[in-house]
Length: 348
Image (cartoon, rainbow, N blue to C red):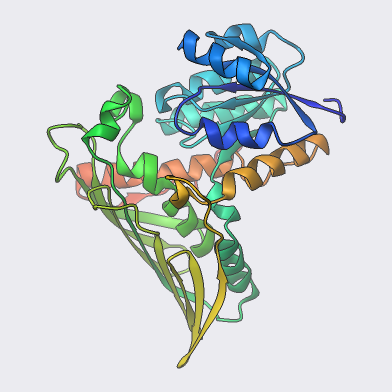
């Protein structure tokens, strides 16, 4: 790849498109070459606005040698399929979560990326929130001692109107699940990132409000057993009346960290200290945070330097297994033992 400019194609111009395009057009080290979407009228209009070419077919774009990186922002069931095509065409990939629906497909995608020597960055942008970065720094420093337990809560609002906007949502075959695979996967990823490797999971899913609208879950809870002996508790629901900030508590030997209202607090004995507050972006999706811009620019920077990205396909695979582990546990009413947490499936 040349070091002067990275050629970019964005595939999928739906809800998350704005977060990607606004980063691309404000980075002078990259050049937007293509937008791709099955809605020709829509993608043509956007291409005119952003002064680039357009297509309704990803294959047309992948044949263009000027394209170095492909952003895949399509419905979940197309993630692996399109990422594989891009890798086979010798492109790097920025892949919106989840990395796929089935673990086996994501593992195959990982193996292919290794074979083709191409990188896949999976979008878990919340890891770049200042509050979570500081929490990670404190935990890694061991100033609070060993982690004893974690709990996390996500209560958002996803109503009938939300699911009616896109036909693929709310179906096992095309979305791969509901709350867990679409919204809560970010929180579950953070629970693993901060707490350490997970050994087994016991969980339950249910559809309590939207059962006449969707076939997937709108509510879930889980108990996570960590390899370091810690225990994690998770609860999530899309049935609340607002998109409330995510709450996370981490209890250690010498104190605890609390993420509340996008602010990190440290409590040691009776002393409570405000550590850092996340800057809230403007707009109706402010609860998504500011991480997309930081994440995407980081990926570009690493690729320009021919270095490894931080949040790669391995992390995408692990996060998906937590989600699938809860689904499996709920179906079988038993603990699910994690398989991918030690990278034991790496290709030699």
